[in-house]
Image 1 (cartoon, rainbow over the protein chains, first blue to last red):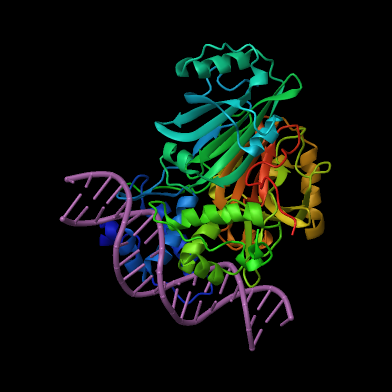
Image 2 (cartoon, chains in turn brown, orange, blue, yellow):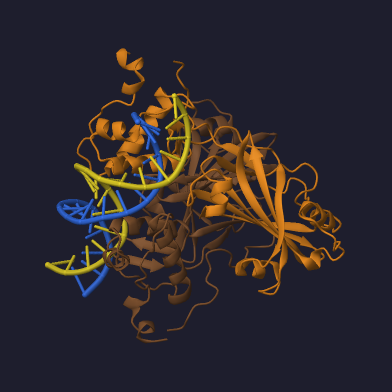
Length: 264
Length: 264
DNA sequence: TAGTGGTCTAGACCACACG
DNA sequence: GTGTGGTCTAGACCACTAC
C-alpha cells in the first residue's frame, strides 16, 4: 500500500490494455468495475472522462462506452455539468400484489400528481377493451423512495368502471374521486408484465433523467366484475431500481455489490 | 402514394432534420420508428447503416445511436454480417409462480444443459445463507420459446438441501438427481426480483447475442423448511422478451406495436 | 470476395451546473 | 467563466456472414 492509496487520482491505475481479441471497452469496463469494488466508496466522484480516457490510452468515445455499460448496470451515476459518481446499490421496490388492493388504497407509496380525461394510446385502449376513440380517466402518479423519484405511472380508468362519478369535478377533486369510486368495486385479480423501455421525454423529466434513459415498464391490468376495470403503465428507473415480487419483502444486496469497501 | 411506395429503398424518406434543440439521434429515432410502424413488415430488412446515415445527412455514429435505442425497445434486430431487420413484437414469457412448483418439476419450459459443484459468487452465497467458500450444486438450464433461446439460468442448490443425494453421480445423472432430491422437500414460498443487467460473455453466447447486450435478470429464492432451499438467477433477453406475472397468462400486444401494417 | 454491423479514433461544439 | 458530461463528425479498420 503505497502513495497510490492516498492519491485519489491514481487509484484507477494506468494498466495498459494488452493485446486482446476482446473489445477494448469491454475490458475497460471490467477493469473499472473491479476498481469500483475495491478502491471507491459509494458517492465518491470519479476523474472526468477526458482524464480517464487519457489514463487508459483510449479515445473518449471508447471510455464512454464502458461507462455507459456500468451506468446501465447501476454501478455509476453520471450527471451533466457535475461528474460521474459511484452509485449506491439498487433500491428494491415492491411491485407485487402484496395483498390485492386497488391503486391508491391504503398506504401504497404513490402520490397523485394530476388527472385528466383523455383518449388513451391505441394499445392501451385494446388492453382496456374500450373503443379506440373513447376517453378514459387518466391519473398520473409518482413514486418516491428515499427522497428521489423512482417511478411515474399513468392509471387508466374507463368511465364504465366508475359509473357513479360525480359530474362536479375540479382538478383538485378529480383524481381522489376517481380512485374512491374505483375502490367501491371488488378487485378480483391483477395481471402484470415487465419489459425494458426507454424513457419518453415527459417521463424522463419526472425521473430526473435524460430522454431515452433505460426504464422498466410495468404494465398492470386490474380485474373487477369479470372485466378489466383499470390498467396502469408504470415507468421505473432501470439504473436505480430492482423490482421485487412476492411476500418476503425486498431481497438484500444482490448483484453489482462490492464484497467490501475500503475506508479511506 | 407514388413510386416511393414501391421502392423499398425510398420508404424511409429523406426528410431533412429541421433546426432543433432536440438531439438529432432522438429525432431520428422518432422518424425511423414511425416509418417502421407505417411502412415496414416484420422481418423486413432495412437499408444498411451507411446508406441510411447518408440519406438522413448524419454521421454513421449518430444514426447508430438511434438504431441502438430502437433495438433496445425491441423494434429492430441487428446482426453482424447480415443486416438490420424489423423485429416481431416481444414474446410474453411467464415468470410468475403459476402454482408453487420447484424448478424442473412438471412442464416448466426449461431444459437442463449442465451441472457442476462450484463455489457460488459471494452475493449468491449470502442469498443462500451458506459460507462464502462452500460449494453448492449448480445447474445450468436454458429456456427456448418459438425456436429461439430466450433465457439462461443458474440454479444454486446447497448440499444441505439435498442431504440424501447419491454419491454415485455422472455428468448425465447429476442434474436430474439434484432436482429429484429437491422435489422431495415441500416448497413453502418463493421470492423474486427483476433488474436490468448486461449479458456476461457466457450468457451472451447462449442467448445468441453479443456480450453486454441488455438483459433482464430474474433472481428467485425458493423456501423450504423455513430456510432458503435454493436460488436461481435467470437471464432473459431484454430485446425480445416481456416478462409476465400473474395467472391470466400473457398480455396481448402492448407497446411498440404498430396500429397496422401495410401489405406490400 | 463483398457487404454487413461492431469497434475505435481524434478531434469539435453544445448544454448544463456551480462558484 | 470554468469544467462537466452529451452530442456529433468523418473517417478507419475489424469480425462476421453469405455467396
